[in-house]
Each structure stands twice: as C-alpha cells, then as structure tokens.
Length: 212
View (cartoon, rainbow, N blue to C red):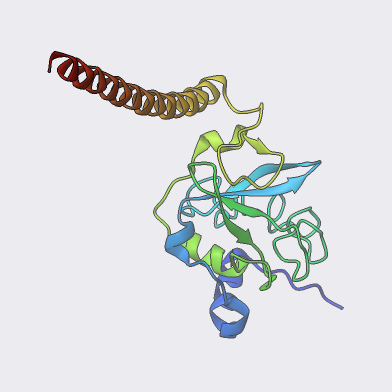
C-alpha cells in the first residue's frame, strides 16, 4: 500500500473541504491571532509555535519553521508528542485531555488547540492553521524562553523567563499591592480624622455647657 504524503498547501485545501462540524470551535481567528502555543512535556508547558504569519519561523503555517513535519516539537510531526493522532499531548488527538494550549502576550490562558470538540474553550487545529495563513501578526520571541508548570490563569512565569522580564512583572505585582495598601491607609486615616472631629465636637459641646 502506498503512503500518501500531504504538503501544507494540500492540507489547507483539504481544510476548506472539511464538513462544518469538524471545524466547530468556540474561538475564532481574531481571538487567537498572534498568540503562542505551548505543549505539555516533562511536567511543563513549553513553547512549540505561534498562530502568526506564514513567513514567521515560529508560525504553525510555516512548513520550514514551526509547521515543519520534521521538527520534533511541530504539531505536524506525526511521530512527535504534539502531532500524533494518538499522542496524549497532541493537537490532533480527538480524545486527549491535555492538548496544546494557547497563551496571549499577558501570559494568560486563552484556550486549547485541539480536535477534541469537548475541550473548551478551543479552536480546531485545522482552523487555527488556516487562521495563521491569513495572519499578519508576528510571534512574541520572549515566549520561547518561558515554561509553565500548570495552565496559567494569572501571572505565573517560570524560572526560565529572562531576569529583566521576571523582575518587571514582580515590580508590577508589588506596585499593585502597595497601591491597595495605601488606599487602606487613606481610609483608616479618614476614619481616624472623623473620630477626632467627633471627639473635638463633643468637648466643645461640654465646654459650652460649662460656660452656661
């Protein structure tokens, strides 16, 4: 039996011929444009590509870059962790509970890249590739050095993030906490002032009563 090999161009043509139910997603192109893809491997989510223009080497639409069937971390490598039809972490496994995830530039989880329609929010992997071919966005290079222990829901940067970015996020976090604390202090100060004014008013009343 002959093995049929598809180029990325042929694959995209087939995508447009797929029935609508196969491409059903809860996310659309505008919701994921320019965002990064992380796959789970060795207890961490690591960068494996981006939904960006096809000339971007990190794009899943670049058949010589992140979209190459020969790259170990590519979603198109059918023998790799993220491209196998049966792999637990694959973008093409219809039943997996741990497909690749999509992360925005604020390091927050947006949804899953998967053909498992029950894993939501999601965008079907084939549809995401079609989105990338129409994208004008470029990938965020800093994402390549970041890993996540769990699916991020807030600022959750790993030790592999650059030191300057780490401290930048840390300073923002402490600035936010300091602002909250200052507001509480202002509130307490106002309450103390009101209490002092009440005591002064009470004393003044007693003084006036004494004079009478």
